[in-house]
Image (tube, rainbow, N blue to C red; front, side, top):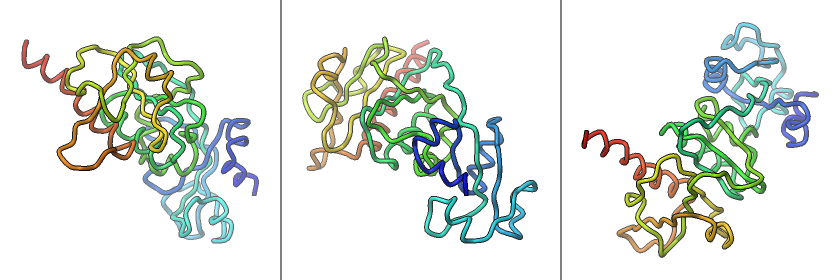
Length: 229
């Protein structure tokens, strides 16, 4: 089945399309105005009126889960939008699809844009779409070959400021892979370095959890400024 090729990154790049699975993701994509090319579903699945019926074997080839929940849709990958005046969360070489999906979900929840660099999991892969829980359709996704011209905030394990100390607006927060963290040259290029101080004995946090804490703390800037008006 030709659509199954979209599990491969090269096919997604060449065709500008990807696969998503399940009625909730399909509903989110449709609500966001995403172009849906084809919808595949098991016979009798009436979750989408214009679906193309396929047997269970074909559905498993299209789906990304062991026990697929149809429908599975081929969608057009949305064009990269504008960052505007929003803050930006960047996955720097984060290869785990679950982490990248959760980072996108978190960015969308707080109204941030999302960026990624080479070495990161493809934000439009089926696994990352599933982990993002619709976040890809609620924010803009940007690939960066060079770091953006914004105040850069590097997340480091120790020696950085508490996130709540930052007052700059429209910043780019950089999250590295859990094992390696951010490269030294990226940390050196950052205007700020931030560290999460935890009361417990753990030395480091999951990348997506750390990003969530940093974004939550930084979101207090707006709330504090509103309270001072």
